[in-house]
Amino acid sequence: MGASDIIIEPIGDKAGRARFVDLGRAFAAREPHSVPQLRGEQIELITPGKNPFFGHARAQLFLAKRGGKPVGRISAHIDDLALEVPQEQGFGPGTGMFGYFDAEDETTAHALLEAAEGWLRNEGMTRVLGPISMSIWEEPGLLVRGQDHAPMLMMGHHPAHYRGWIESYGFAHAKSLLTYDLDITRDFPPLIQRIVKSGQRNERISVRQVDKSRWDEEVDVILSILNDAWSTNWGFVPFTPDEIAHAGKKLRPIIFEPLNMVAELDGEPVAFMLTFPDINQVLKRINGKLFPFGWFHLLRWLRFPKGAGMRVPLMGVKKELHNSRVASQLAFMMISEIRRNADEVYGSSRGEIGWILDDNQGMIAIADAIDSKVNREYVVFEKSL
Image (cartoon, rainbow, N blue to C red; front, side, top):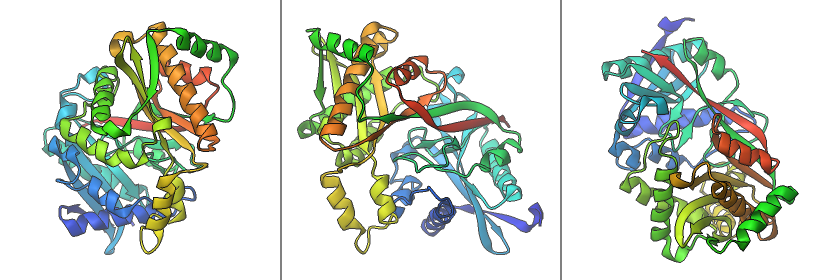
């Protein structure tokens, strides 16, 4: 069977989006360590009007069929805000993306990539990055290392052979995104403990828990620091007000105050660190289904996620403090406080930090200093059109 046996079908309606999601779920179910996500949440992510990403982006979904049977899927999308990013930061004028990539075989993979490229080219794009599903803040990159264990929340999981299929179609490595595994039952090395104690004695510095009683204000503080701290990073696209409001609403149920910190310098918020208990642990138990009894297990877990793994998906220090001693000191102070609370309050034993760009020497140095180790690598590929 060759490419002539494959029909590529553009998807644009509600029923089609459901089929697109269900096919992805079927592919994921084949992978031993994949975790089924909530189907409704997955559909929402690709639905204009539900995901505020579409306030500044447009997309086309495709299904591949052979003999009437679905055998693959892909998205092609353009983020207008990403087009405004300087090219040295990853995106820039003429850069489109592909994502939600699944295929039965290499021939299907190439047919899907050809369809995505064709749509992007017709939209005036001259370069493509992927997989990014669908925003850089959602699930960027293809898993190329770490298939032997389950992903934590908001991280993708892909079979190893996808890499070869993408590279054989002419894509090259653009950037690696790393996650680091940490044993949070262990104290940090003596040097880090001294740095933390030194910061605690500094009257200009304070580290406090996020206050959920004024959650909307805290969201504004955190994301304003994020937009400043990450503004020169590869792949950065700023959050819009609608995305900030949406993120605040979505994240609130998994925000536990002892696990989330804001650092202040002279009374001004200058850094933050968010830590989420790994909801994937309960999603795996309920097979990603709320009914008939999944909702009960999920609500019980959300009340107190005892023993959950912990993921640090986001942290940032204001740009004016970058490359300063106080920046790393604030990071170690927040990590130390969160590590202790995760261990003593929630009985957790494992943490994960990331993703971290493979050339972010400051964050890599922090991860190395606390004895964490790379456990997963995701790759974003690029190609000229």
